[in-house]
Amino acid sequence: MAIQEMKERLHLLIEETNNEILLEDLLLEADSRIHTTNPYEAEGLSKEDYDELISLVNEPPEKDTISYDELKSSLSRWFTK
View (tube, one colour):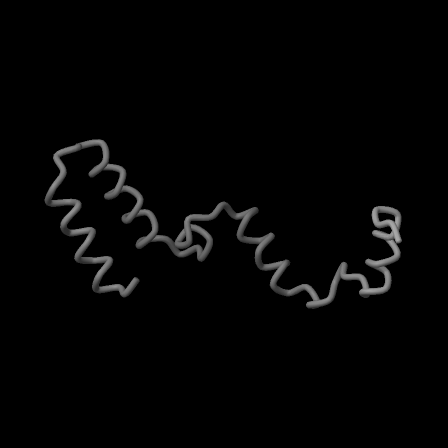
């Protein structure tokens, strides 16, 4: 969804509601994400979740993978010939 479309939808939702709790939640969430200096908070993540994602991104692409032959061998007991 385009940013402009999201802004328009948010404006409509805000204008249509009188739910004070919802409006307060939106305000607090937006304020905390906009005014943070931590990238994980801006994304709505805990520090631990953010660090885990960063470590996963930095892992070698083929870490913990097995070859096709190893897979076939490990699954052979489940298949009959």
